[in-house]
Length: 416
Ligand SMILES: Cc1cc2nc3c(=O)[nH]c(=O)nc-3n(C[C@H](O)[C@H](O)[C@H](O)COP(=O)(O)O)c2cc1C
Image (cartoon, rainbow, N blue to C red; front, top):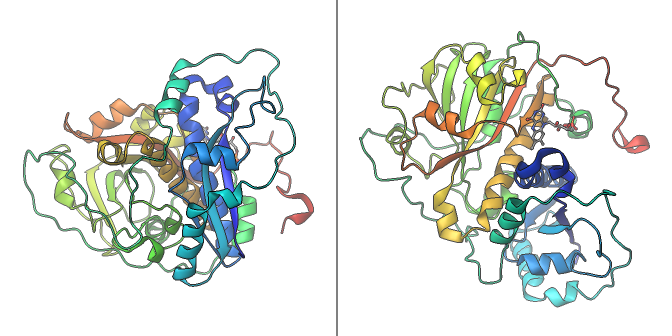
């Protein structure tokens, strides 16, 4: 009652026609971005939102009407991804009530009748990418998949690997970032676009940069329902940290940095023990105490950042670019292969937040799905047995306008 469900699905062919095998991952990045769009839009209306993590993919497919073989005959396959519940902000107890209701009585949700036939996208037979089918099958979530339980507090975390040398932690616990005055959320959401090129010149004030880092802190020490929006939408513990190339942030030495997104669960020493021994690990001057940001190595990393992102200049000409590094093996071993997609959803959600933060700061950003992960791991010196994995890159800076592009209001007469 007073709640509705949002469902997302993927048609891999919509990405695979262009990107081939990488399409599966790009679809999952996009799901993460889409989670950000509806969680943040819900917040602007005073609504809450959380993914229903307990549903099997079969059930989500059924609820979304994707299992109607006749209506989908001869079209490119469409796969279930998730269902999320949205409701006007009420008490946390009410949120759980809604959850339990949906999970306990899915029959209530399947009573409706779907109408309509799916549309074929391409005239020719789609190119078969066996690996995409393989990973789709391998990551299918079943009723018996083990579930994270973060409703009442964080779960224990396993070490990244056995330590090969020791240092002491100087990490701090996170706090709450306060936004300076800024344009309305609606305006920012409507104007968001990707930068196609950067000016190689504009720098960001350090305070603004620190605020962005505050916004992507999931505050994993809190029970799920008390975490800041949009991190309250993902009902599992965070897995993703950042390796940053800072090119131009006022007051910060250019160089390679590490940002620990959940210091309440991961000590600094757990990273120091699996990365290059020569890294500095110094906290930049002026960095708020609750941000676990460390300079690893000072220097101009523009060329390197470009090379690591498949030679794309947008990674080097920006104010900063970054790699999102997931704690990879541990959650997969704990929950099973279905969690693979959720790692990408978290990176997409970070990306969506940073896209909007960029617009609010008067700059622009671009997601970077094309990068070389092994050289990124080499650069950071990940120990061979380390289970950290680069999953998504991102960049932000002063955009260069492309005069050939026209931007129209995204929602016609509904735009602000
Ligand atoms: C997951 C993801 C990966 C992307 N990867 C790249 C990339 O490697 N290089 C690039 O120039 N743009 C990249 N983009 C930007 C897209 O090209 C852009 O989002 C898309 O063209 C739609 O334009 P818009 O963001 O302005 O709405 C990426 C975007 C996303 C969401």
